Amino acid sequence: MRIVCLWLLLFTTTVKAQTDSTFYDIVKDSIITKFNRGDFKGIYAMADTGFKAAFREEQIVGILNSAGTLGKILSSELISEEKEQRSYRLIFAKKSLQLSLGVVSPVSYVSFGLSFYKLPIVRTRQHFLADNPLKTQLDSVVQKAVTVYMSNKNVAGLSVGIVRNGQLYMYNYGEMKKGEGRLPGVNTIFEIGSVTKTFTGILLANAVLEGKVKLDDDIRKYLDGNYPNLQYNGQPVQLVHLSNHTSGFPSMPKLNNGEDPFSPSVQVTPAMMAEILHRVTLDTVPGTRRSYSNFAVGLLGHILEKVYKTNYEQLVKKYILDLYHMQHTKISLSPDDYKDFATGYDMEGRSTAYWINRLATPAGGIRSTTHDMLLYIRQQLDPRNKAAQLSHQLTFGDTTRGTGLNWGIATTSSGKHRQWSHDGGTDGFTSLCIIYPELKAGIMLLTNTGDHFDDSFNEIARAVYRSWLR
Image (cartoon, rainbow, N blue to C red; front, side, top):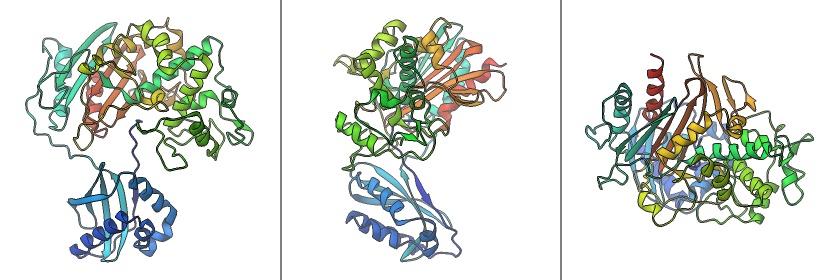
């Protein structure tokens, strides 16, 4: 899962009749008009009776309120046309959304969907910058694996890092910034997004090993104030629940004023944190159901700061970066660092601002390089690294599909190998870290492209793994 804030709504009922094609534009234009004047209840009122029977007004209004943070809809364009549904790109002041509609009359809809708009994948690129020497079998495997992903003309750059039996291998493709012809290098800086969570898991493991905390500690032990709501039937939220996504906390909560506490423009204060925590309502016993939560990991980082009496960045530096010799991995960057920072591109192909937010930093705020992340993977494979090894221990689920301390834990489809992994993404970057302990191997993928839904990115790692089975 990723820090990029993505919500998806798709409500559908069956369309039973052929629809006049002009009806779609009439309904779409009516929705836009109502949206721009804030008449979200009016949009819900346009739904047919079947839709209203299935979905409450407050559900739709809540989603439309979230969309309202993007500004007004400036224009629209048709994306696709099917027999019973059309999709439109809605261009807002800040971003675009995709509207999917099913209609049977010029005054109502039977299906309604909103999601972030992304550029369509266009696999027309035949040539791209690369530093692959094409001398070894691994070189050939990687080259073949990246070709499909890099054929998408919307992809900017890509770095592939591999660890096998202690040896490091790095390959770079594309551009750090579109149009400049500068190939990424081993020390090009990328946002690693939610792979940051594994760093936070290791910090928690370290605190356990040092006797500063216990995994089953009630989190209220480390919070100022009274929070009777942070329990269910007498069972409290524990530190481990923050790290394995079983706390029951929302992933991306809002402040009372509707602001997003994960926005770079919001400086989260202790009062804001307390506000969010007081509004949490648990609906099940903590530790029994997994539901991904960026906020929970952000809170875990906040607790670790209190335990160690220092900030998260210093904790990462002292207990991970310095020990692992990761010299180019940081949260705060110097002016010189920005010279090596790749430009990120969002799902619409636009360059993005570099992302930083104190609350979300423990969940997705680290920036790193291919070389540094291979040093990180090598440490995960070292049995002498007790904190790393503790972070890989199962805390929820089973070895087929479970969670450690922020690590995804699984068994490969062949049943032969364990897998520790996490992916990540921000508006302009995507990452993937996968480790196979029995093979003494790991793979790190970094791209300055924010399309997190192109499976050919993940296929690069799968192809490399398959090559090890031959």
